[in-house]
Length: 144
Image 1: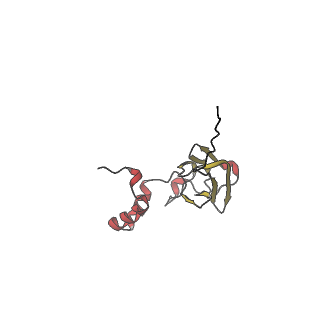
Image 2: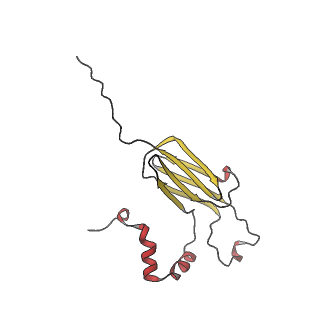
Image 3: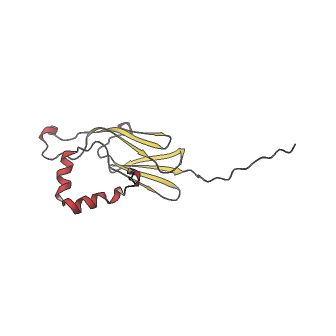
């Protein structure tokens, strides 16, 4: 029986790889795969889902856009390059600058007109009010 990607415990992958290959593996690995999108955390409370995205250096709301379609949320925009030297002169270049797009499949239903977002200290926080999934539906009976 084969496993599907949805069944994998991705949260422990980092620890397992580090245990097998050592701590230096991640330093070498990050130089091979450039970061093209912001790091994101997603968690839920009883009433809402919260997404926190690392987006350092944004200057205004015009620098980032949030879209929702069905149960998918997309964050896109552009992170400014703010160094005095050109990118090729960076000795270590792990932070992404430039255009980015991050798409997140949401694991819960939400109320579309109750989405709030705020940006502070380089973090974009998006709060989505959860929609009740189990609702009692009244049935109207017409007697003939």
